[in-house]
Amino acid sequence: MKIGEVARETGLSAKAIRHYEAEGLVSSRRLDNGYRDYTQANVTQLTLIARARKVGFSLDECRELLTLQGDTDRHSSDVKRAVEHKIAQLDEQLDHLHAMRDTLVALASRCRGDEAPECAILQNLSRPQPGMTFTVLEGSHEPIGGKS
Amino acid sequence: MKIGEVARETGLSAKAIRHYEAEGLVSSRRLDNGYRDYTQANVTQLTLIARARKVGFSLDECRELLTLQGDTDRHSSDVKRAVEHKIAQLDEQLDHLHAMRDTLVALASRCRGDEAPECAILQNLSRPQPGMTFTVLEGSHEPIGGKS
DNA sequence: GCTTGACCTTAACCTTGCTGGAAGGTTTAT
DNA sequence: ATAAACCTTCCAGCAAGGTTAAGGTCAAGC
Image (cartoon, rainbow over all chains, first blue to last red; front, side):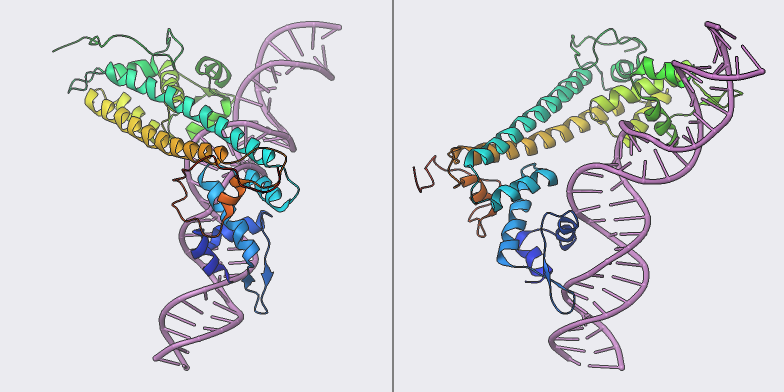
């Protein structure tokens, strides 16, 4: 199988497949004309990479998954541990994004959003002395002041 | 104010501050010895950048926030719109991460996690014909089979 | 006078995971 | 013969800095 067909089958780009080879995740035989030639085993590996990437594994982590895949003496607990570790990482990221979102929502709620130039958002973002840990913003919907 | 003090005050690294200057977000005067010299206005801008970065704004978006900050005729609605747009972006990211997490949790639930080599996770990740959109994985906790 | 240490300078490479383009070879069809 | 559709390698670039490297500056201490 040439690279284009593998690309269509795995949903990867040919560029990406070559990249994985350059990074040492997969290998390939060569045809007489120099074209890459892939076995079904290669396609299976590339499918693993494609799907693992989609659920958040890095290339290094894909490398480990490939090692586990190639090791018929592996323990399924090793694989499960890797997945659970990745879940924990995702949870961390989710927490972080949630915190950012909460901060932004709090900021937005303090901004009148009208034609006046006074803006609580900009004031909060650039005020020299914050008076609070920045990621913890709470408070009422009190108008900032000025004309109205 | 020299760059080190500004760094301490804003929580940014000196390298980051120079980077922002190279990217055209802030400027600085120079002392006779070539050292950068920052005004309070500069510090305010850098504080804006530091906090905006923390809640997910890119440097390009920080550039826009700085423009709004410098425009005394801005409308607070413009700022609020930017924040709400960023919230929407965060929501997209959150949805994506949640979907990945759900997939991983479903995968993990199908793996026995014992000393046997058979692993539903690897099978799902590398099976040639998925038979389902990969991000939608459901199903029972049925054992895979083999010795036990 | 001289050295040490803390501070500053620029320049250039490393990271992650590719994508895009340049410049060219191969194969197949017309 | 030539165009279309493959394939090849190599080089640049994205975000947002971190990390050396190699060096200038300044104050203090001997």
